Image 1 (cartoon, rainbow, N blue to C red):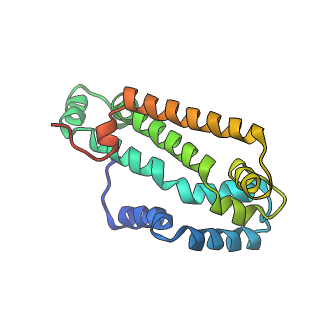
Image 2: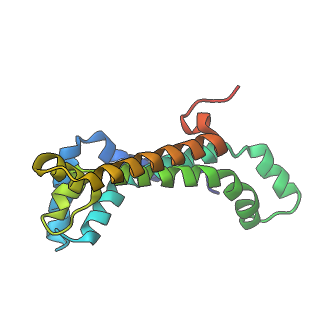
Amino acid sequence: MWQREGKLHQSFVSAVSLPFLLPGIVFAVSISLVTASLGLLGSLVGIILGHTALLVAIPLVTVRLGLAQVEQIHVEAAKLMGYSDRQILTKLVIPIIRPYLVAGALFALIISMNEYIIAFMVSGFSVETLPIKIYNSQRYGFEPTLSVGTMVYMLFSLVVLSYIAATGKLWSLLGIKES
């Protein structure tokens, strides 16, 4: 059903995890070449494509951790109660994995807002993201508004991570089994 551990599944997980195994600059140059060949170099779509290619693994990992929390005995009980596979998915599995999906999406958002190398390599000189603006201000001149932006980003990250710790199963997101 939703838990498949075949060779195709393992190949997909390996391919999605590949950007985390490569050095950041190697992946950024690769994405830059791909976006250039697609004619998206220097565009917002190219930056979104690069960040998506890098960060798609994070929600997938957290959802896999959530799926590991679905116990077979609950699935069997739902089947005995006459639930269809679709009802099991919507009434049992999705409520269990929802916090993991939200946590993965929020982690990806925080990392994406902080990703400098891919944004710099893909944006060219036409699009300036927050990390590029912060880096440029450190090199070429200080702007007080960027300090405020950095503080807002830090507070946002703190609030998101506190929310995940308070509402989710933080230990299982870290891969630690609860006793």
